[in-house]
Length: 121
Image 1: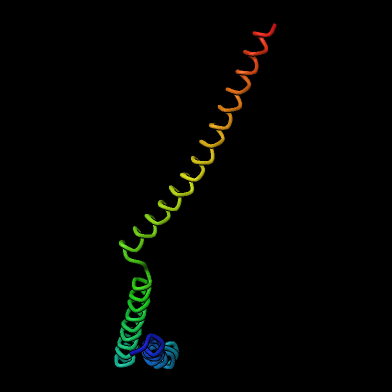
Image 2: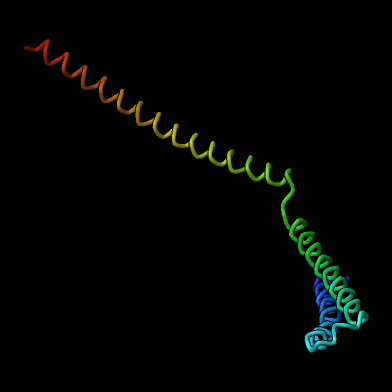
């Protein structure tokens, strides 16, 4: 059974269980509650309605559970995100290492020029 037809079947079962209760309830309210058959009918229809409602609830829980990713899928996604983060940080480290090397070269050149200037004085 497809999910749409299952939902419609559950709702129809709930309707068919609830609708007969309405006239019986009105009859009971009109002081005809002394008839035990009316009371039993309402209880039976109420029970049928609750069973259909429970089936519908279980259906929605099952559908919700099926749409959730498995633990393996969640872990794979987390691992992929962490690997992407590591790759990004590796690139940043390489860039900063190059900047540090350039700074060292500039400092070495400046130090050498300062030493030669001091020697000339």
